[in-house]
Image (cartoon, rainbow, N blue to C red; front, side, top):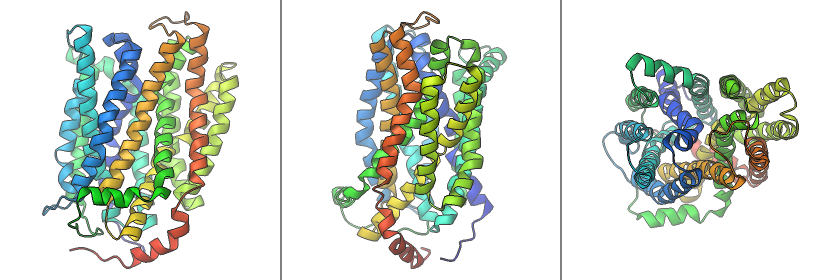
Length: 452
């Protein structure tokens, strides 16, 4: 297929929308919210876990709903682009409220956290669905899509590096400069402003060209047409496992250093190593892997195999030497983090597959299914960490005084659990349905014409 010429503005706007402010907000929530809720907000770990599960149940309902609505949206601005305007505003609102500590009794605090979590989940769907749906609607070439995905992964890595390496310093600076007691709140507002700029830039530079016209089928007919393809089930499991593996890497790190190593003074150093590893992974290694191995599937197999080996080493020997811990953690992060970008290639593959088999564009529904799977992974990660800590006898703030059962649990959560998610991911990749139809999909894309 003849290569498409992509405008630099298109590449940059998509990359910035993928990363930028949204990813900094997501990284803050993933790495710091749980310990904020348990150690500062004062909500018991078990209650936070229940809140996360309840919020995810609602996500199970609203994610497919959002995709169905988007696929049936018809405006002069397109099918998915209109959602780029309000989504970052609403996401900023709920993400900021999540860090507000109201002077409520415990029941009120739990209700506050639950409502804010549900709000964040709904607006994340509204934010990520159009961003994922737009790429196959605007670009049809596999290489060109991979170029944009790799660029977005690089921006994401920079955002994660900033968030996970400098959060505490930025928080302290804002508290001092603005005279506030909680620096997380102005951080979220600043990141929300960046998210608005990047999303509105994507709105201005994108054009939906390669989508089939909406049909008069009802929503249930479309959902049935997609879900009947059981061969796509491995993709859903892969998206869940990738989210869990990536989330565990960040969400368990602070607990690991603070309580397992009993070295809170090393949090900034360790998170810096993890963040720089993620930056190298997505900004440097991911494009190289895609260039060498050609497909996201093969790149995932190699990266996950290397990741599992590193995690097994750290599980058994990570505490024996700080140098070993730092070096192997960096290598593990450098090969593991790209999974979060590589699985987006599978979203485009699934969209192409449904268009080949069913003859209609289901970008919104499939993107929302991926978003739901990703949230499921995040939910299992966050609630799972809290549930395991609660069951192991975790004592908030007890540095150097945690029971042995908690120390074993922390080591497993940091290295054993993500190794298992990697193994499951590799097994599911063996059942990739796209391999069988790749030539037919390429022929279909050759016949696509630009929709004026």
